[in-house]
Length: 507
Image 1 (cartoon, one colour):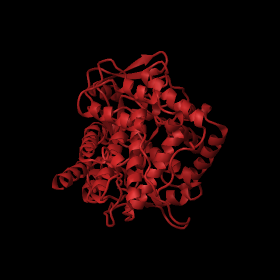
Image 2: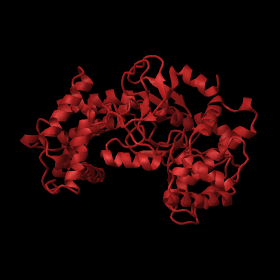
Image 3: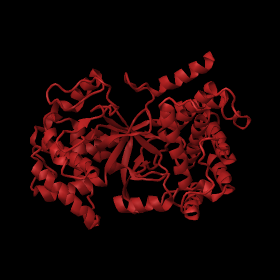
Image 4: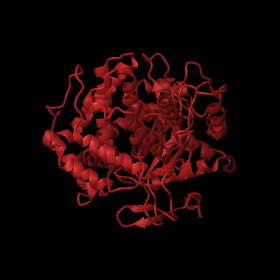
């Protein structure tokens, strides 16, 4: 039994042959919603960086090298390489113990940053990633095996088993990868290796590595809000878990670990699946992205329109074709708060009951609601409208605006976005939890700020609704995130909800 097989078995999982997919990972025992299915550090990861104003300056990290949370005004750095920055000494110490003790100095970050300026901004992350992967694989190959952490042996072995699909990539993308590989060769960033035997032309091997990482990398998101925080390559997770547009598992990036968790109860023999794309996208857009980036088509129960979830997806996707552009009747006048359509409330009420009380036929209720709703109201264009309104209102409020209409606009937009998330994602998906919390906070701020709530909003802007949404947020994020994680500049989800409760009790 090799290292990968041993780790998979110890996690209660099993990889079996599949006539359609090739391989699939199933549960060898029962898992409860929120259980950890697998936890491992990625082969390589890095946080988002601040781009310099011009090519004469080095990029600066905007986030902690371990947890990827935003850096405070004053922060510690690694005393040896002076490149890795941290939000706290706790993260610095933990990162050193976990991996930085051998990563430190493997690559010359200044040389990489200088070389990256030769590329378009959208391709600089590719350069950082593939150089990092090459440096890690070289370290594994050139170090006494006993000194290499077992998790790194596992990730390196999994990398060698990933399929690159190089022959399936477009010539235009291969040309761009060729330019990146030439920059890698010129960067002189350190000793790199991309295959197990090391017998390779660096530029050609880098192109294959870019193809392999391009269809197997992950984006990471904040543990406190749905905001992208960095990138990681975790070959074992890519190797094990197939895709579904309605997954029964998700992952979080927590303190340098990729943690895969169950989104629902999983029975023995059930396949465990993640999502490779945004499930809110219309069916045609999802299929297009999966074909172009991952080179397969999806036939999950959301993409199979004979199922309840599939029928919901079909109605929402059809709405995109019907509208084709921004629906004309959507409100845009911030001087007057918009009315909230009945379907939004009709979705949110059974959803909160599903999460907090007894399981109900949520999917059937969702189908009934949207079956009688105008197609334009359900379109992806409508979702984008409400999301843009929410973000614009939040921006105004964060800059000190106390305009009552703007506050009501923020609340209503947030409720619309939450309704779309409920339709698109599994019930315990973290994005729904974050949106529940955001909506609860907006409703509370409106309740304590606006002297006279309009009569038609009083059933929405009330303590009972705020409490239910906050409880939903905590229940969901305990499953699909880590609500206890905090830093001095980033209060935990638990702390935010506790503050919300205390404010209501004191009023």
